[in-house]
Every structure is written in C-alpha cells, then in structure tokens.
Length: 497
Ligand SMILES: [Zn+2]
Image (tube, rainbow, N blue to C red; front, side, top):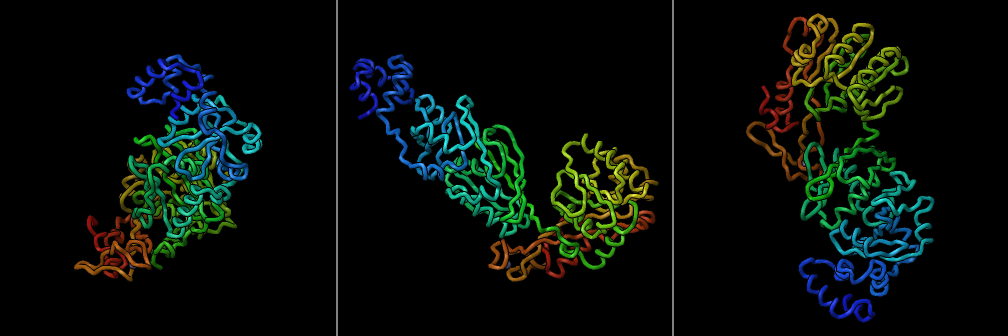
C-alpha cells in the first residue's frame, strides 16, 4: 500500500486531499507525505506519527552490530551513520522525523533509511561523547590513534588500509583520491609516474572520503574549504601529509603524501658517486660559509640536505633547522616548523641568539632571508639552504637578484649545487633505441612501469670556481654518462644544453 492510501485509510486525510496531492506529485518529484504536509493537510507531527506506523523504522541491527557499524561516529543532524556497506545509506536516531530524513536524503544520492533506536543505545555507542542535535553536521572523533583507525573492521576502513599497505609496499610517494561524475579513482605516484590503483563506483565516494578524513585527522564537517593535516602510522612505518580541496562534482579530492620514517637516505643511496660525495663532505666539514642546493620542485633537494645533516657531527655541534614544513624528524637536530613568511623572519632572528653551529634554512626566497644567511655564514656559522634556480651558476644570479653583493657571494658561498632526480630504468625489461635505452612502460615483475627507482645527479661550483668563473661539471655531461651506461632513459637528454 502506498503512503497516500495508508494516510487516507488511517483517516488522517480525505480522498479529495489525496487526489490533490497526487496531482502535484509528478511535477514536484517529491514524496507524497511531504506534499501533504506542505499543502497543510498533515501537520509535521501527524506526518511523523503516520510514517512511524507505515515505514519499517525499527532498527534491524543489534547492539553488537551497531558497535561495529558506528565506529567512526559520523553524526549528521543528530543521526548516527551506519557504515555496513549495504546498498543504501542508513542512520539511527533516538527520534524519528520526516524533516530529519529529508535533510539526510539531501546529503546522499542513494536511498536513505532512518531507524529508530532508544536514547540509551545512542549513549552506549557514543560513550562519553554527547550528541548535539542542534548542530547541522558534526563529527565526534573517537580517541583512537591513526593506527587503530585503519585496523577497524568495516569495509571502508579495510579498503583504506589495503590502499595504504599497497602504497607503502610499492614505495609510492603520493596517493590521489579523485572523485569524478561517474566513478572514483585512486592513483599512486611511484617514481614520479601516476598509476591507477583502483576505480570504484561513485556511490562509495562519500563513505571513502569520510573514512579517509577521519583516519587522517581532517574535519568531517568541512567540505567546502581546503584542509591540511598529518598522521603518523607506526604499523606502516610512515607519516602521511594530507590535503583536501573541494571539486566541481560536490565532493573533495584528497591527496596524501607519504613520508617514510626510516628513509633518511645516505649520500650514496641518493645515487651520488664517490667524487661528488667527497666534495660534499669536504664542504660540510668547514666551520662556516654557505652551501646552496638548487633544482626544480621534486628534484630531491631536501633529501640531499637531510643526507648532509646525517653526515655531520651531531654530538659536538648545535644543529638547528627552520623548515616549511619539517619533512622528516632527525635525531639530535632541533627542527622548527615555519608556516608563514613572518614567522620565518622572527624565527631567524631568534635562532641567531641560540648559538647554533649549523643552520638549515628551508629556502632562500626573499632579500631578508638572503641577507641574513650571508650574515650568518660570515659570522662563524655553516648555513645550508636551497634556492629556486636551474643550475649551479644560476644560483649566483638568483642571490644577486635577491640583493646580495658580489663580494658577499665570493666571500661566503662555499658550494653551489644544482640537482635533478631521474628515473632509473629497469635493467630487466629496458628497450634499446638508437640513442641508448628507453623505459618499457609495460614493465615486468621486477619493476613498476619499467622503472626501479631514482637517481640524483648534481653539478657544482666550489668557492674557487665561483671566484675564477671556472666551468662546472655540467648536469648535461652527467646525464650523457648515465644514458651511455643505460641507467636512465635516453629521452632525458632532450632539452639539456
Ligand atoms: Zn622491468
């Protein structure tokens, strides 16, 4: 029996009223009960009491099931979300109303069921957290750690856990969770290249996004603003930095950057040869001066800087860093996280009074920082930093543009390095070509898409080279060598002078 007939049979409306409502219904595409309410034939209260008799509003799950299904404690308008991977979206609440149901329906594209449970059940499920019925959409976080959260037993937690495990296993650097109009795509970036991990039905966009946001510490109530957060997973051996932005299909794209905790690579692991390592070591053992590493985003500048800090005498020296953000935690090194430029300058001034021997400044990008790094370098400190420039010689131009005079550069710049990070070809499936070897994108069982890792390549100028304007060992020459030895794809030489 349809709801309209049911309402008439119960005597809540008469036949005329039902006919009127049915005439309106096809145009409004709304539920008949709501039309009856809007036409004034039913009061909200009488509609709710009729719906309670008409719909199956008794919760079909027992408390044991609910404890599992409601673990993430997602609350909307006072109703608690059930996450059981059923075909429809289900909520429980201690009071039933059609207005509440309507609000919930607006949040989901699929069928929404609202079940009635006693207030005690809600209290038991929420523990010490209380349910705020006034709030339009809130999320009550539980006290679980990120590690405990991914070990939850519901299907979406399992999916996220599997995704994270696979990502770590394949040495993935970023995971992209991308909602589209008709599907949801999860992709991994491995060795700089994106691969599809899984395509999922669009119905699961919201539950997966909510689960991710919950696990990674983002606020579930915020969907129309970008957000950042981070979480640390002992079980996976990595930290994750997460960022969400609203996208056109009404959902959010979430990107997770993975930072492997045990992965502070040594200079050798970065792929540098003995001669380059010797040059770098010689320069980090000097008591003062400036070492600058340049290169495009993703060229591994920070990795090299960390490798240099790892090589230093951390017992005998006071080493401090100002970073935006701190990417990896280093033992016996005082690391400060700087979020704004204003902070950066005040931290710099404060740091000078803390008697550091070695200072790492995340990036020299404004005249004030350039000036300060020169001052530090000339007053008995060893300063390590990065600048945005394409080559070792261009570093000097960049510093000049930031207002540093030629004399200061020649007096303080001990070493200027330019770095690139290149994909290493899998030796088992590489394809020969006229100019050398090419990556076989299909790959083999020993690699991912024909790539087995990455290698850093540097060119450098030491103080004497800078003063005497000697030509450095160029990146192009280094790349030629690697192409000749079949280590990198021959197309990497294109565009190199
Ligand atoms: Zn291979």
